[in-house]
Length: 208
Image (cartoon, rainbow, N blue to C red):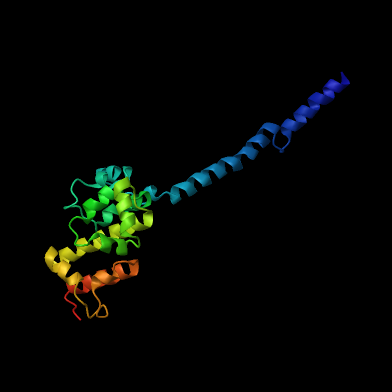
């Protein structure tokens, strides 16, 4: 009997104590784990390109859902390659790579022959032939270069107002570019930006 009384008194003392019960202690141990999961989820969200500054437009879901260029537009001739709105979608395309069939559609209005494309893409005509025969996709770096050239070409046609005039300008020695032909700079990203800058000066009436 004496032991029982002692036990009851011990229990009542525990209830009156400020120290947490075993159950409360277990909850406090789980809390950091839950916070860790929340932090990880937040980190993943912040690293997600699609989750950052999504345009509030119904078309965005269609643009971002497919990595292939066919899903981004219905007509290559009217597609605006320099529209900042399509930045997220183009990043996905670059990471995925475009196949040779899409490349042919993109290259169709441009004046570059296969040898010129081989130089621009830092590859060989033999490799391009193999890509075409095997329906292969370009690597990310080559895909990005193709899109850069497409953006540049569209910009040039807009500035000159005519495809033939821009084609002729690409093949003409340019004083501002160091007396070299603009087309000879298209095999590097820096060169492409140099040509773009020159087009910007022409567009705003700043001539050398």
